Length: 384
Image (cartoon, rainbow, N blue to C red; front, top):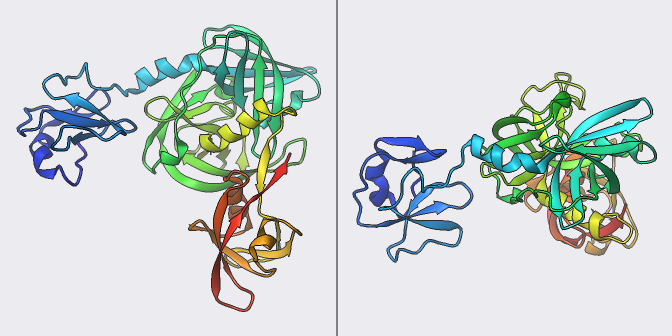
């Protein structure tokens, strides 16, 4: 059914009756009875709203003339159209090391006349970091040799380069604009089956996820998008897009029936993706940095791993770093960051890692002597 803005309830009320799905979203099957000749389509969701009395839509919406609005002129957001748009930008990542190998997925994020870049998960290509070969397979079957530009195990991200230009680049969305219930589509090569597409919704946001088991021994921390779109081994590194085909996440992990996060279990409807806004900062630094490395934000604390209460208890401060500069005392228990509840040290680490170095965050703590206080903290920076 049509979404109605608070100022347009009377204007669009008559259009709700007989609403049918056309071109991927609801539109009215009957005649519009209001006096307004323009409606506004939301650029992100394609929900329809009555235009203000001056007939001008806000910048986040596109004006459509009712006299010309038909199924062929309204924006199309069907899964089929999104697949046709996105698939050429999705690649299979084939890693060969010795007599073995692995397969993952990726997306083309930049391309000029001679060179293209692909973003994927670090765990997909990590085995080839010191030896072995990497190839990407395009949607049309072309195989192109690839090399590692740089990688960040802390965020489970890696960037590959191929010496071929003018490749199709995926559209980029805004992961911070997601809401629970939004439609999403997962692309990739699960179990080596290239060109696989699954769909679902955003099941949850800001889900603290940590994955380990890499050869470097470094855990990655993700303030993850949770989705019920089927994600399986081989989907890792592939894009999660919104309903318009814009990448808003990188498929990274799934939950198994044993409640562990693993790339070896089948899909049970609990998949996790790295928010693309977070990934974008990291891969841009990897590409542009002279050392092809990225940075991560630093609060400058050690958490008490033996603490079992709610929140994250600070056992030690790093001299000269952000928390000490802000005046947060040892023994304080972090309970929220920018209004987001902190349940334990994992959620505290994940939330901090979601920011860029230099960002200012509001950290609320329970003080050692009792009472609560909120500190404004400018995060430091650490280089991988």
